Image 1: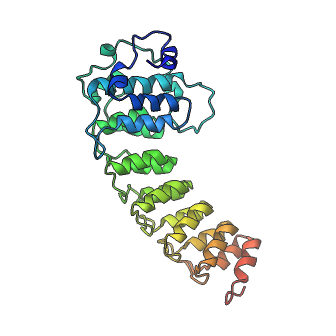
Image 2 (image 1 turned 120 degrees about the horizontal axis):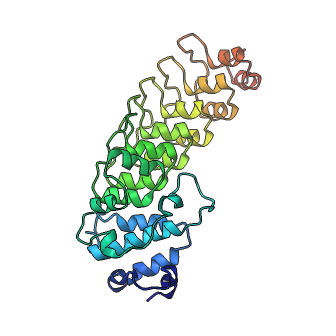
Image 3 (image 1 turned 90 degrees about the vertical axis):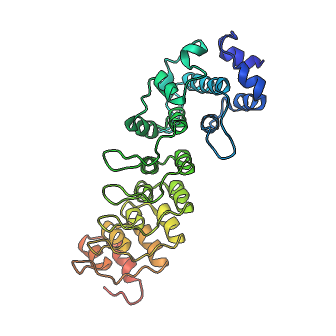
Length: 315
């Protein structure tokens, strides 16, 4: 028996994970080794998602042990711990108290029953809430309940879009591994990559591109992820998109390119990146404005200098 775990359990063995220790001792050792580290949350989620390729899931008594340890760990996190606001919140389980196994989860129950027993309804709204709050335990339960990973909320968003907007890399990985549609579009024609670019989440964008996200897809306004990144001044995402081979001169419905957006708003670094890779500074939008004309109109003096330094683009 792990003496440290007994101390964590309040000095009693009533809720000790005997089944886990007897059948999977190395997993228990790993849990205890990671207990005070950030890696513990994704490890718990990985364990609780039992339908991965090559694994049929844990026996019910072992699964119950793992779930209890996950909730206990979340409950014991210090409320003043500095962490990303979208990480799993310690307050989600501050009222968790160990109960007899049969009162918390019946080893013969499905994981949907487990959701209900920790006051999480198996509904699309609850699934999106789990994503937006980064509740890894709840997400693992939903995934094990085989919820449709392409359900929609009232914005037309899929869970993958919500995770991309929030910058939740681990959740994106989980959703992709369980069949989420990479290039699904919302009510505005945006994909998850559009939302990652909009919010400036480079790692999320990289994950999506690595799984064949369409890099040049235009939304209903004609905006590509590149235009999104340029308009929001996200240079790192823009660089990633450029290196991935985007069309630098794709126009939105109003004729604006990414360079038009940068010129109009005075985003010098964005403009430099685009020009260095060959973006065309001579294209005019639907109002016959080139990037240079927009910079002049908006009194973006540094941008005017930059654009007039480009060969064959006089003031």
